[in-house]
Length: 497
Image (tube, rainbow, N blue to C red; front, side, top):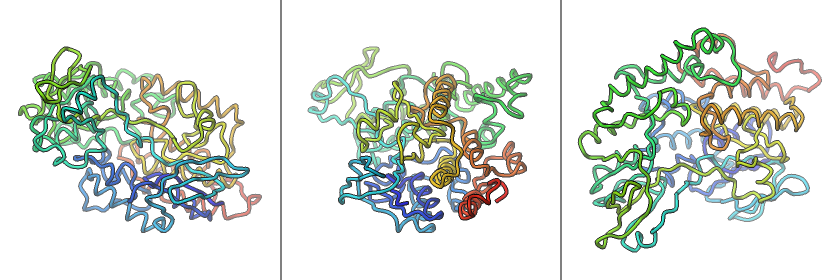
């Protein structure tokens, strides 16, 4: 098939690589001048780095260079993805600085209108990213604020600290992005204030100052501490007879974190239990954040919201819900993203969503009611490159007719049940069904289970106590390629390939 992929981020690149290897004619469009998606130079904010450690945030057959730091910077990740595109030959498939403005179903396949002209493809892969378009709140008084010299910008529009030199900066949000930005701009800004509607627990990179958090939470045992919709193996024990011990293990991390960073003295102890971290995903502590708060270099206004922007004494200010008025030359909104596909027609988009805007994607890949399209990277996880790569293998098998799918009605029921479960498990913080944290490995297992291409039992056992090594999955794509090359009647089981 001729396949068009919209987006040259992590998911778009690996999907192009896998689909090309099994014989498809692939073209990848991206509106930016470089690959990388969220890691593109056009979107990198100062202080951006990975949350997952280097060796877990990689493709199965292309490890990150060993000389990179444990948590690579945004620039280093983009360079890695650029090297991956060159290594796999995907760089020859790229049409950078080419925006897909519309994709309309044709008699067969899709008709694409791009900034470079019209194109047609047999199958469309949507890989535009679930963290693509920043969500910036609207505030009363913004005209008055900007007339006085104020700026309202998303974090992705702030590319270096020099943009706010000698300006009074207010950062809205308390996730990793907000804290990263606050630390990065602190040395150049006239003042830096973080306005946090709700404090969340932060995971230390080194728990207790010595144990890398990946040994606690980026293992199968760590994932098993959170209850999935069905239980298997050790999960039955952890959420049954050992449930009390399991809860104490998780909740003990809260006091450890509070003591390690002196959160009580800073009045930055979040409300609720540490286990509640699952409801908003894991936020890694930004190096130097709490130290800067203690030194008075960053102020945190906890449990506050912005009610309006205004001009005061000829300068831009903002007002909080407790009546406090703050000088704010630049308001940086680290307030999340919208999940959307603006290039698709409204009638198609309507069939992609339920009544609450959740994506109706079987396995986070296949729409239940739209033909000739699949989604890549809509299973955002702790191990996004690995999850995207395994989903790409699923797409390759699906296009070859080698996935035994349920009926459309059964797929819709499965999607509805998964969304309902995630609503409860994450308190609705699952990015409209596109974020699978903290159940990253369950998603990998389900995708590979459909293909009967799982890794060995020994490799899975190793992952219970050790951080997940993506290289354990390096054989999946070659086995799939071999399988798809053989005549279908001769197939007995993908596992025997």
